Image 1 (cartoon, rainbow, N blue to C red):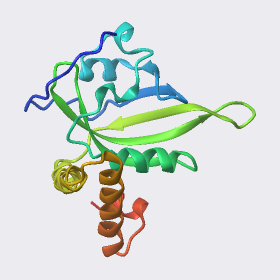
Image 2 (image 1 turned 45 degrees about the vertical axis):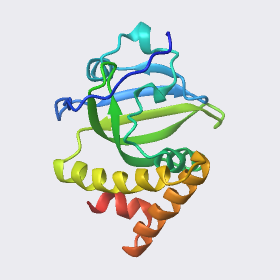
Image 3 (image 1 turned 180 degrees about the vertical axis):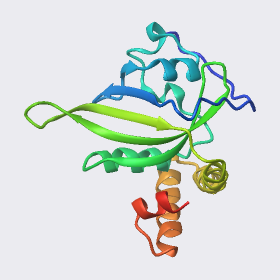
Length: 173
């Protein structure tokens, strides 16, 4: 796919509560499968999306530290996260994602599997506020790595101040 710059719009897309967005990637995060719900909400055809990096749908409002947490956690186990994604035309949509490693018959991780469900509106509002704070922290730093690390610490502090682990925090909203 030709590299292009997609400009985010202010238009939110929705998908039915009884549907799930499914995608699979290889170890490098390249999409190997996307179901019809994924294709419809993201606005891509199967030919356009297969083989592309999963971050093709990353919305710029998402802090990098959230994806670092996701990848760090996936090295050991599954993770749940609220994610704002961006469609091909710049529209956005929210998912409550459950991402798990995919294993071969001999137990080696061979890729990743993501299920995205419709989040409740209060959850979207809660995480919009948190992500705005984390993104602001990331942007305070001239070096993106330093910003990501600082925002990651801020997220850890937010969770610790509630006396919870990440898994408890994500389900407490």
